[in-house]
Image (cartoon, rainbow, N blue to C red):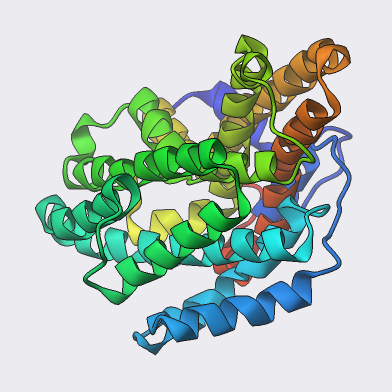
Length: 335
């Protein structure tokens, strides 16, 4: 075991001791973006409950309780504070759908990755070919796709469908990794996590929130594309910090902090701080690149990148208080 990593784990920036692992995260994580909340949050929460009920998803065992623990409308509100009520509802519905889909895939995939094929195949067929759904979960996805097409431009909706297919494929990679954990390296974990995070499908909705489409030159500018990658990574790695206790107890593999723990053979607290170092570097690179390119961006381009910023900020504020990750407050800061 590396003593260096263990020494890092007990330190805090100003020397003040902190009691729990959640406090340790708060004291080390660099979060330069101030908290914001959408005024339409309660409306979105009611809309999510109604939407899930229409498609029969909350009739399934455990789903209603899971939604209560994850608060999808709250996450939508924190990540998308400036969106109008209609677009916020789509974001909240999509977050709720992905939580249901992800938990279902995890449950099935743990038994056998091959059992996921019908579920994932249906999703790809809906998103790529417009095939009719054959399950309640597929019907919910088809309706979500309809909502996006009605609100976004054709090119934005196409990007949404493409990024959503990447998310679907990522769940199969995650199931394979869970089945063969001895083969999973840290780089494999971060690659899979970037897909299963499901953050990038929301970037086209950040586009749709702007008064006009971005030009292809702006949308595909190398720096803007890099900002998208940094935003998605930071936005999912931050919840990994707060979910690490839950994931460790469940035998999860695809978690940034747990990947560091396996690689360095250190305590959970030390692994969390190693992950924070990586996240802080990602956020700092995002800030630097955004400051460099912002003067060149149109107002729509600025709004688009601000949407990415919202996912970094929102995932932090949501993760630290959501009941789904409450176990992080039960672990001491010092191993």
